[in-house]
Each structure stands twice: as structure tokens, then as C-alpha cells.
Length: 475
Image 1: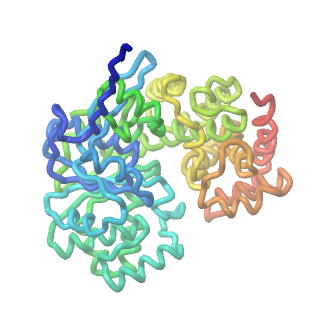
Image 2 (image 1 turned 180 degrees about the horizontal axis):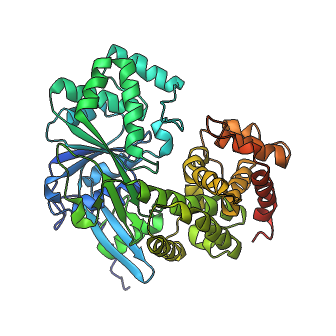
């Protein structure tokens, strides 16, 4: 009787700094709030590529869910970056995250903020997290009121909102005498540093006016524009890393080759040399913010709503739809004249966006992009509508964004994910014209210098027309 040898495949090692060739942990000098794929593909990548990156470790805290910390803590903060070009993948180990924490690890957060060597707090929590209204006033939600009451009892207590968490950390820093610090926003909000400064200062004023004065004197609220398309991690990404690199990474990140970071700030306690990796420090980040918000983010919203309604699942599928492509080009034609940048630069950016969108190896899911439309459309689309109407034109591309979003609110396309949608959901079930007028007034109500958009008959008619156009000839 013959026997055959039984072979077993040895288990692959888990990624950690114990593996040969992994970078050593850098001393923590940056705290990040909102740990996710984008941060690891962007700010963490820039820090790893700074000439002095070995001196600048990041301690990152998750949002409300601890998943990222659960995946990355056993890996000592390490993760694999898969740069997915149209002609193939490249792999890189990013080691600038020295420590990862769940949001609830409040004592660890306070400990970092008390250290004089911690010089920067970066933020990626999405637009909703700032709890700011269009005039940058702190929205006095029940959660904000609860945070204020807690912090009045103990200014460093654990609280739930981003403004509250920043106030608690800054209160701890003040008491420790740890000196100045920069809070650097990396979210898709115009003048995001000023928004962060406004909501934090207002909350601090309600807690302790003396703390608000200290923040005004010692905290540099810096603004930035960030850009790098970063889809959700898939099992296929994990399997690819294991096959190609011979270790288990529970949370690799796939991203595109393109990356951009433009910022303005004083950075009184210092910062990494991010410009070594291509970041730009400028006097005014607003033109770059507008370019990204109106062209990239605005068209992402259009493709997410209209594309998913028309049966597409990802950006590359949607941009290949001739109707979606036509609407995107119209949106860009409307936004471009209002950007304070050279026309050639805007044209080159548009060309680059089309190439990025068409990359079939970046499966940027539309269901990931649809979230929080009630906040996003106000900053991505309404400014272009206002500018075009002031110039006497009816913006068809912008009208398509609003129409597709109304259809999304009515249940078409990708699932709704928007905590701020309730006022809009209350009005979209009426007839088309009434729904459009109500939605436009909620997006841009009457103010001191302009009537509500819902009273603009020509704009309303364009949106009503596009309600039918978006669903026509669905694929």
C-alpha cells in the first residue's frame, strides 16, 4: 500500500513591526481624528514621505466605530498601500501611524494633547462632523448641548462631538502648559480651518470664556485642500497583499496614483516637511478648495446619484455612460468661469479628472459617495448655482445634481445614508414642482441679499425637466 505525503501550507505571518524590513515607530508628534482609509492613503502617506518623517509619528483615533483600530492595533499601525494605476499595482508599507486608538480611549487622547512635542492635530471626519450651519455657527443640537453641560462640570471629560472633543483636548493642553498647537482640517469644506475655529471657539465660550481666550491665542486653525480617491477595502485587496507580499494585512488601502495637498497655516509648534512629498503651503487655499469642491466633489455627487439611479455601481461605470459624462461636462462648464485660477490650469485639472474617473482598477463605489448629500450639495453645488444665476444663466449640470438627489431621496439608486435628510424627506413626496421648490429653499433659503432658490422659476423648471432626464433610458 502506498502512501502520499501530506503537505500543509504554513500560515502567513500577521503584519507587524516584528517582521523584517518594517519601519521603526516614530515618536508621536501628530494626533489624527477620524482614522480611515483616506487618512492612511493621504496624510499618513505624506508624513511617511516627508524628509523628516522619521521624527513625526501619528497617533490616530477612529470615529464612532472602532473597526479601524481593531484591525490596525495588532499590526502596530502598519498598513499596505496598493497604488492602483491602469497598467498595474505597486505596493508600499506605510509606517507613520505609531499608535491607533478607538475614539473611546479618551485618557490616551488627553495624554497626547498634554505633550509639548505634539504639534499638530489633523482631522478627517466628513463635513457633517463639524456641526456648523452655512454661516459657520455651531448647530446647537441635543448632542452639542449635552457636551457643553458635561464640559462645564469637567472641561476635559469624554464627550461625543468633534467640537467637544477638540475643546476637551485643548483644555487639557492649556492646563498642562504644553504650548501652542495647530488644528489642521482635511475635510471637504470651504475654508475648513475657519469653520473648525468657529465651532470650537463657540463651544469653548459656552464652557469657559477663559478657555476660549486661550484657544484664540495659542491654537492655529489651519485650512487645507486634500485630494486622493480612496475606495473601500475589499477581501480581494487583502488576498492580493497576502499573495504578493507574503503576510496578512487585515486592512490594506487601495488608492490611485494621483495625490494633492494644499494648505495654509502658521504651524507655531512645527510640522513635517510635507512639501518633500509634493504638498504645497500657500497664502490662500480657497481657489484650490473651490476647484476641488466644485469640479471633483461636485461631479462625484452627480455621478453617485444619477449614476446609481441609472444602474451603475462605480465611478468608472458612471463616467462611461454618455448621459452622465455629458452632465459632468456641463457641470464643469458652469463652475469653471467662477474659479479664480488660470483657464489652462482648470482645463488640465478637468482632463486629469476624466482620466482618474475612467481608471477601471479604482472601483470607487457610488454607494460610498452618496452619503450626507444634505451637507455636501450646499458646499459643492449651491455656490455654482448662485454664481451662474447671477450671470444670467440657467445651470443644467447643477440642476441635474439637484434632480438626481431628489430622486435619491425618493428611494431611487443607492441606499440613502444622510442624518440630515429629514427636512428634505418631508417635502420630496409632493408633486415635482412643489418638491423642487421646497428642496431648493431648504438648500439655499432666503437671506439678506438673495431670495430663496425655490422662488427662481427658471431654475425650478430646469430641475423638474432633469427629474425625467435622469431616469430616461436607464441602463
